[in-house]
Length: 276
Image 1 (cartoon, rainbow, N blue to C red):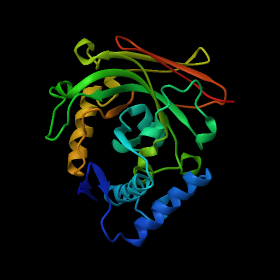
Image 2 (cartoon, rainbow, N blue to C red):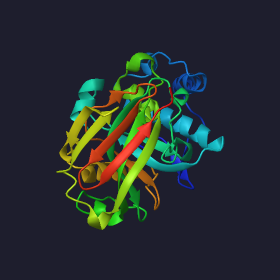
Image 3 (cartoon, rainbow, N blue to C red):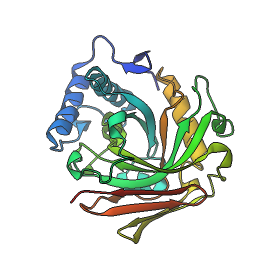
Image 4 (cartoon, helix red, strand yellow):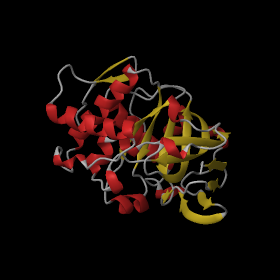
């Protein structure tokens, strides 16, 4: 994968001149986000498997967001779970950017009106202890982590009816929406993340289950993939960054007014309630 952008102050910056196709796709997704009206897939502009161009679209909108005052606080890896890949009809991970205003960890209720067609998934998040400026492996990844956290990612798609190809979700900032951080433990106290169990409930009823190995074999493998792929974009992960490592089980549609709780063995719980 070639890097679609240079980097300045840890922000992905678009090339000076971008193709009309990239701008058109980026504008379509940005308009859908601002109007809260889902748009048609962008694969009428980009080939479904043209990941390089899709990342250029993502970078175009990330840069516009940064220019408008939004602050990057981390990254996410998506499409790590075979169950989620089957749900969306894709066969490889992708990555997106987390902004400070996406963090709903301290909100008593998540505003459903901020979202278009949200779905929720439970996963492990990491808070990084130091920069990752060279390639890492799953074995060395823990050396860069301060906290291991039980988390929800509230994914969302600007594409109508979630009718997405890999290029659609990559262009759409990896279908990012919001996130919630729950209980955390020091990395030194973390269990074997490949063997953890996750159960997510909706209003007390179990709706999703999974294990750590469902996330690329282990969330540590997911962190290594994300860190190394970010390096190819000239945008390394930094100390203090939040990293969402990918779903541990199937995502489920968010119901208005519902409360979701996930329990991850050895790590803790995370809870999110939505407005009606």
